[in-house]
Structure formats: structure tokens, C-alpha cells
Image 1 (cartoon, rainbow, N blue to C red):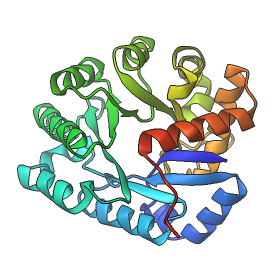
Image 2 (image 1 turned 120 degrees about the vertical axis):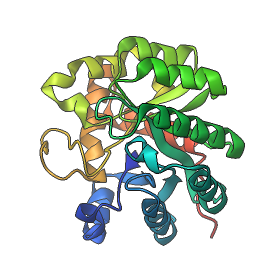
Image 3 (image 1 turned 180 degrees about the vertical axis):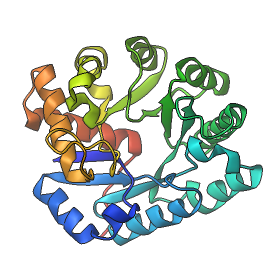
Length: 263
């Protein structure tokens, strides 16, 4: 069984046909998925929580504000996430939050301030921070050092080998890999997933509806397709898909504190 550790299920391309998406996911052996609340402002947190409550046997959610929307983050917004979401049992992570200097959709100082607020919140509620980092490696690592956050998830890892090494040696982070590892230009990332990150720190994700893996590249991504990402990394590590799926699912359940729903 596989665990899609990061998907934006509330996007219309998935939400409007979710029963079929869910059926396809189960057919592919994908047992669990974390629906990321930080998709499109505050409202996405409510939509993610709704998914987690409707499908408690297979879905949990996160809560936060994406760095693209950092300009909207105020102390009041952080308090809303803290008071209405962060401590709920359905919420297993804080974020995604972080720094994106590639698109620069929000002021960099504001991104850094918001990121540190959510890092502190993750410590406060003892739930992993889910980090988005693009073209911001040094500032991302410095924020972890400054706040004392030692563990969490670097989602959709696209960073350097040096950053991967820092996250698994200086820090106790898990690195999550997306369908990019199946792309022709994703060879270096595949090598990092296979050679740098210890097996007990590897996670797989879709980042649905984005980044569909080969052979679905260019189409709407969905949780079922995480199987192709897992298969690529398993082969690169010299493991069977079954063994790799078992290990990464165990990793996901441990970092997210994912426990069965009480009968």
C-alpha cells in the first residue's frame, strides 16, 4: 500500500470528480493521502478539513498559508490557523509554508516572517512543518536554525544535493519526492532520492493536480499516480515496489502521526 503525502484535493479538477478519483486511488493501492490546506488562501483549509472528515479512514489534512499568499498573512491569520485548525486530530501537519524566490509572488520579507510564524506554530502543537522551498535554500535552512525546528517534511524536493544532505544530517527532516523524478530532466533528483536520503527519511507525493509523472505528464495529476513515482525511486534504489511502498508508508505514518480511526 502507498501513501500520497501531499495532494491538493480541493482543486476543482479533483474535487468535482472525487468519487472516481478515490476509486482509482484505491485500485492503484494508494491507501492514504494528506490533503494540503494551504492551497488557495484561508478557505482551502476549511475544504481540506472537510475532506478529512468525510473520508477519515484514508484522508488527513494540513493547515497553513502557502508562501505565494504570504502577503495576506497577519498575526490574526496565524491565530485563526492556530485556534481553528492546528490542534484538531484531523490536522497532521502545518503548511505548506516556506519560501519561493522563483515566482516571488509575495514580498520576500513577508514570506520569511510568515514562514517563521508557522515554524513556531508547528513546534507549539508538535506537528511537522510541511515546507515549500524554491530557489531559497540558504534562507530556508537559516529559518530552521533560527527557530530551532529540527524535524518536518521538505515537500516536492527540488533542491541541491547539499541541501538534501543538510536536511538529513544537520536536521532530522523527511524529503518528499514528486513525479519530477520520472522526467528526463529529473535525473539528478532521482539520484538524490536513491543515494543521499536514507530510506527511513524518503516520502512520495503527487502534489496533485500538478506534476503528473510519466506516462501521464501534462495531464491532471491524482493520488493514484504516486505509484509511478514510487516505482521510479524503488528501481533506482534496487528495491521492489512492494518493499519500497511498505517503507515509505511507514515513514509517512510516523512523521504524520497517522493513526487508525477509532471504531
